[in-house]
Image (cartoon, rainbow, N blue to C red):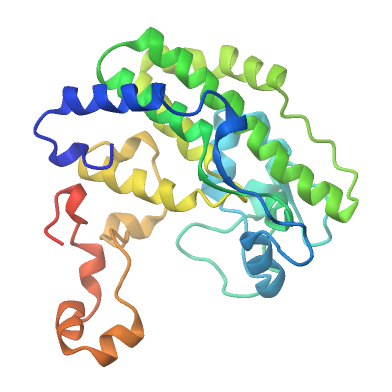
Length: 290
């Protein structure tokens, strides 16, 4: 799916995606998961970072998405630094303004998932596979089958976020009321997702996939990959990031070379230049040359 932009046989590759997924995990019980965190000797990496730095915050645009989409995850996912739940309205009002954050600790409300000490890292999740299947089927105009796969994906994504939120809840004894059960996910899918899917199937699939990668599971890199490939294919509005710097060509299309590589290797230093290539050069699978 990453290489769809440069594929010479799009339909053939989409068929391979579906065929391979059908040979893979049959449920979340089989997903590729790194699950050794006990909250003491081994800790979830997002928790480790958050606990050490205390410098993250809720993105206003993410909170707005949950609000606009009537997504029940939004009312359960955020808290302040006193570890008290906050409303979605407060998350929107007090969250990080996209593009102009204050670089200071303890400034913004945070995600409940940040302190999920025991939440596992998902190397390849069942919901990711189902989103990929739904996307492939939608691109082949097989919308009914795509809808079935999307429903499976959404239900599994709710369950995964619930695991992260409850990890924080249990580790800190917060007493938060978390309900992202299959019934809640199904109600959301039937009443909110389905009407939007019927209007624009592919857009809704990619938007739901983006939201599903929110949390402590280590899937944000793949959300970045998805946005880059959608951007390369002229479909970035499916997700619609709101950082105003994006409009001035400040969206990073790739990671830079590391400091030690640049300082130690003249060839890397030449390739790095002033570093602004990260805003202008797509990675190879998005149509770039390197």
